Length: 233
Image 1 (cartoon, rainbow, N blue to C red):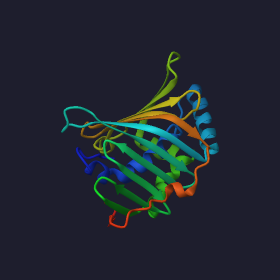
Image 2: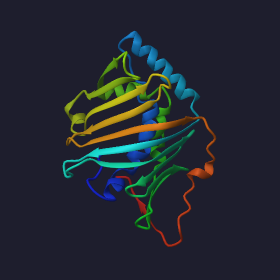
Image 3: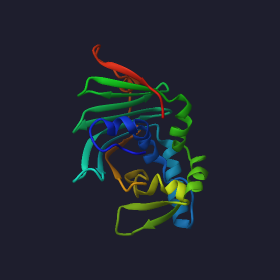
């Protein structure tokens, strides 16, 4: 999940990861337990996952990169609909839309008048498995140790994931997730890459199970937009 330093490369290199990130945001807590308090939280998270058919939220993405003197902040909206449709809309500072629908990831760079498509059918199980409680539990526990913090004075639980081995730490140094104590959804994520770059997502105005028409995930590209077929590296 390495985001590039500037401009459109940020989106180009990480479209698949970003599109999946919102799915991770719903389900990341459900992997293992070390005490009764965490077990209770996981149970609530699993119930929320099971009952969540659609999810909509505003987001703020903040990136701290070695090549930039100050954090880069982007804002937009995230939409998910079961079983496998996702939309990320970046409104500022650059207008970009990323959609997964019908096994295809389409990234539309509105300001540049271009688009990219990637066939992700063979990755869909991996991307969307985090919507379920099974599978993600064992897989994440293989690669990460974690701690669970319940500060009584704060409205969120904190999960702190650290890699179990050097191979993983070369790509991911740390992941922090803040779980809302009322909704049991992830309200904030902090992701530290192997090179020290940091990405944060904060989700607000979260709407659960409100109607989302499938047309929301259809990108109607202008006729003059150049569409490039890409391959997952």
